[in-house]
Length: 246
Image 1 (cartoon, rainbow, N blue to C red):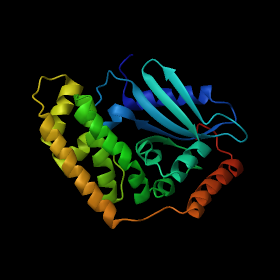
Image 2: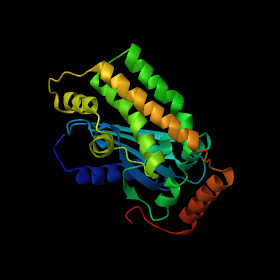
Image 3: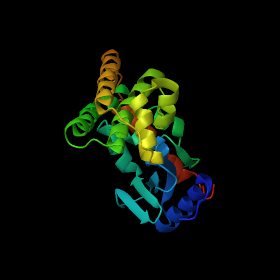
Image 4: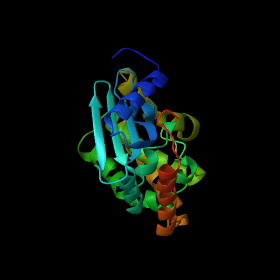
């Protein structure tokens, strides 16, 4: 893959998506995700992108577009709505780094739909991630994902903001030595001495911090709020004539 800037890659990805989806599909948002967005992926890795589209009438819930250098997943608006309804946290973390937002999509209002209950729903998967690391597979990549699964929701509960660049979070907020060593090992292929037991202690501290935050928070998203946002979005898409180039 020729080396381009991320901005240039994003433009190519936009063009690719607009060509592949049906003509009546409206792309609402495209967001950078995956290891490069998390702060530990090198520039030789795929660029992971997540997007939401709307098509009136029946269409697939999601579309995966595989192309050398790109890993793109597009979800229908209804599919994303269901994910939020069932209290998943990922519909928000996957869209934390947008590089394209359609004028009919109110991004700030969308992100405000995220509540503490979405983090609570993610707790079992967080604990499973740590258990896999502890008993099945210890690697820099697996360890970094454990940090991510804990850092991102803690930062959200403490600030109201979702930041998925964990290299930035660790530098500015958490300051874990083992995270930095894992990043150097995975991203730059440096030979470093990672203390896996110290990492597990970090996870215990973070999990305790997360649980304490959740004990103080019981904010939930009502179905009325959820339906209102998505109904407004659909009405905007139907009633306002924007082209994909806007």
